[in-house]
Image (cartoon, rainbow over all chains, first blue to last red; front, side):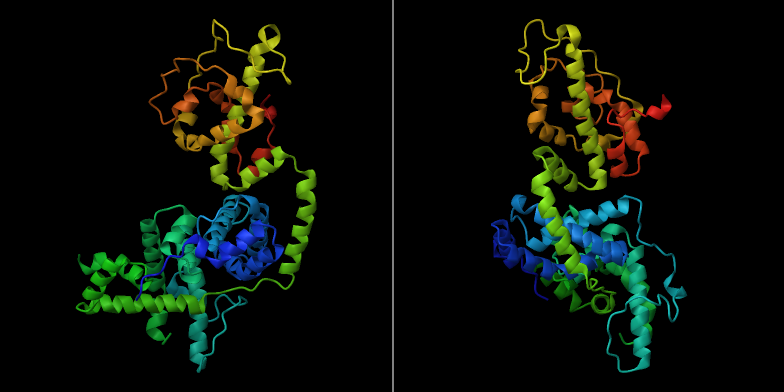
Length: 205
Length: 240
């Protein structure tokens, strides 16, 4: 396994897009919006657990990028800066108290077939019906485990594993040390491993 | 290092996040330890399962259209209606999370109260007219200041309220607060509360503690919106 490469801010093509936008190129902003909307909306969704609020937050994040165009300085990758804004918005949303991500206390052993009905599940292409069931169970279980994780562990894990940020970039987003991120990701992974053990043992996923 | 202590390193190894030297050490260990090798296989499996099976959403069909419409509305509102002060205030607010805002607001409120205190201290007899006149020139004897009020227990306990006191320095850069900077501070700042975590900068600003009612009010309030909607003087009128 090779060590992840760190890209200097000015070598990041998205930083270049942001700088072009700063100089008045509206198309550059449009490209950034289109490229990062799916990532930000899913980041917010995993943070808040609510689709409508995730979309609302995503719009606010990009409005803020627009408003802050003149104060932008390429000190980090564009995605790091963007997720920092998104993280702050999500924190504000949760701490307002009007909305909280659902935390359910269902243990893995209590999960059953058909739980979380009505949720969007990822597309799978299984060869057997049993695999469909296992995939659905795993998906629902992952959702539950993530929601039960402490906020910082969940954020560190999703940014690292799903959005591809390095530990150092996650540390910048969260305002903690890289060592702390290493610990957060480990603990989150351990929780997932424990919570998914029976599914992984029973099915070939 | 025993295997149990290596687990954090193993996850970082799976994420390709170890520096070269550490990575080589872990790889060497894995070549001789079947238990850790099994753990690495499991962590990798968990990671794959997470990326493949996590629930993902696609933005609603009208998401982009709604956004561009909102942006167009903002483009018209922002330059036309926002003063320099309101834009600065809005951007500052947006740069802070809710909890960061609390101490920041305390700092901001203290500046305002301190400013009011300075104005009222000049009063009908010794005061200088405000407006475009320059700040008063300091003459001898120096302006007498009341002693620093005792710091309430609640304030002592909430050291976090003062963590963001640097915001005061930012506020002072703003022209509206120029007069505050011109005020002569006591040569010997009070030291009776210097052992606390409260920064010395604040000890030198007695007006800060005059705003204790505002701090109390903020304690009672649940979110920023409510704080901003609170009476500007920070007094709870319902208590008389």
